[in-house]
Image (cartoon, rainbow, N blue to C red; front, side, top):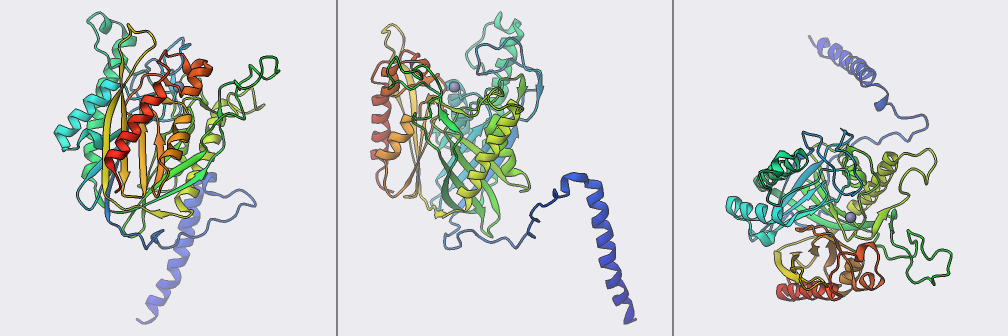
Length: 455
Ligand SMILES: [Zn+2]
């Protein structure tokens, strides 16, 4: 009798070793490290990254695939000649819900889509307030601006429009998207569980100013050449880390200021930001990575397009930039984490932006601030703001709280130049705003920031 357990205990390791070998064979080469690779360290017990930070929050995540079922026309480039033809990566909408100790809640939705049309923002905010009691000021909708997603169509359509499959399909997609977003937000709020929040940042260098260098004299041989390696950029990669009470990493919200335009093909894809999210989520079951687009109006990923790097395809460049950003986020997640405490304070208002042509109606432009205690101030601006906005606001709002400036939020009306870009002219200045466009927006940011006061 006494021997039997010993025999069993000898057999068990043999069985485990055999089954592990079989498992490795079945899984194939992908689990076999390449020759010379550093062996993966064994996974240690889960530990909080910053145990001194109280798990005083509740956080919930949710994610939904928004890849169109049909091959719709694609967004972003005016020169498209046909609809999408395939998919290399699914597109997602993801939501992070946060609740502070006072019960204040905020939801941040990020999407692998071209933009947030104003009517989509209005519709989703109204329905979310009704269904979940979330005030519109506490909802942020942000788009990655991938140029490998579908065209959105939110404006009213006529009976005749609906006979045109190009218009009808993108209208139907946008209607269904709104339903999905309201449901997604409810799901994230439904998942609220105790959490610890930390903020960190790192840097990533592939974004370059895509405009020409307007300071060069016209006779300079580089005067008309873009991109501009000396132009303004914002290489900061801010990251909000969410972990469960026991230290299990639940999600990260990370930012970067760069167009998602590595790709110009006819396949659905999240571009570099889609890959950054995919790589961060790989090997982390149950973990959500969300990309919050920054002030990317005049920023492109480089190298861009395969002609620059012989033998490297556009898709490979998107993946390489995605890996580079994911690596920066890994560092932002772990290097010098700073505890984030509540309370949540939000402010949202619209400022009228006017066009130089007086007959053109003004545009109600949304500005939103979300404060997470005295630790993080998130400024969310609408549409394609150029990088000058984030550089200026980070300087002007500098204080104890980290300042994070997002673009492409709650609105999509094309490019929003700074005064500098407005004066220089060029593609990002062509929308026809009046010269005071930057002044109006920045004044509104300061007014909302003052209104919130010190946390
Ligand atoms: Zn753009």
